[in-house]
Image (cartoon, rainbow, N blue to C red):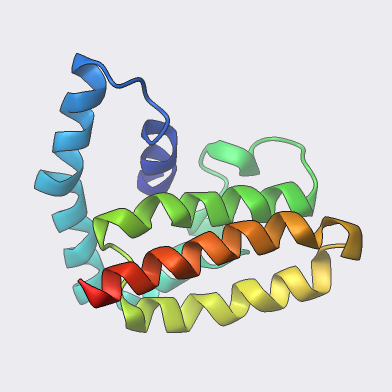
Length: 134
């Protein structure tokens, strides 16, 4: 649900409330997520998989909607994309869940919809490279 919150608040208006929420992310939520990752790396990985285990999904967001697997995959990648600027996604974490995403895209996305995923993946890899350099 926290990942869904990051995704939802990424599109808030740039007003006083939006600014306050953006300050909360690095001050509290990001630190908490990094602690969770340090203490329970396996749980963090499971929550970021394209098909999360039951305890990590179906608690709001796009899993509650009756949408296609392709839509669920796109929404899930966008959720991860919203975490990247906050350095929540470490290299070891990325290396654990990203192969699962690539396999899910390869096996579950029709050829005519792959272009949509290429754009998101290209942007994600660019963002992670920028963060690695910093």
